[in-house]
Length: 239
Image 1: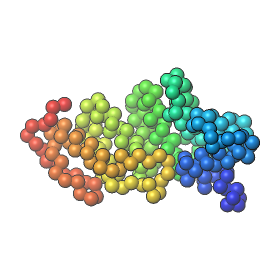
Image 2: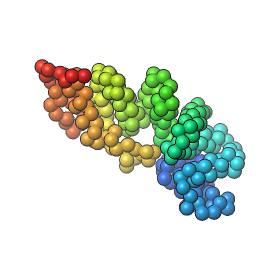
Image 3: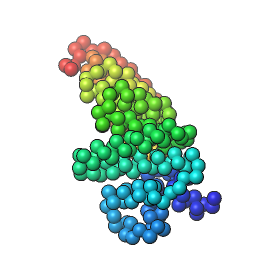
Image 4: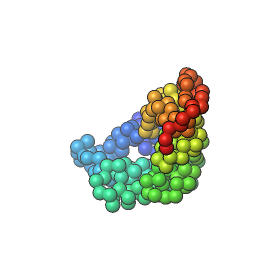
């Protein structure tokens, strides 16, 4: 395949590894080649809807890998539709569709690139938003974290859950992990799929300090390597 062809082929590693903005541009080009007019004037809902129509009607996957990638894109575009929809009923519907397609992708694909982390991470996020049992969502998020040691978003979500329910010991366990693995280690130079900077910047340390305070620890310092030194204080904060 020539470089020009690879740039407009949504199913190749060249495209998928460059992230969502590049994927959108590729699908814009494909729609234009199909005769769709005013692509760049469309709103988000219309554009993502057209991408899905292209995948449903204009693709004929000729391999298991290509079929798997189609499921990934369907999950991604339905997820984006949910993010831009103003109807709660539509949001629920789009999230259920996205979850289904991400799960199919994870089941049939053996790709080990960033798309697998993203699909697994979003599976956990969607399961939580759709009110699936937390243990199911947590398992998906932990699987995502194990897939890519550079990405901290899945652990960030787990920490937020345990803070919400004031389960400070569990929150501390994962927050300590985040400090060691992700603090000041933003992977933006090597990853593309929706990096959340708050999973790597000063917010990681701020949240860890709050958790330590709730447990009765005074965090004395945050060395550059992300390790923490805890010292007990006599009067823990009120939960």
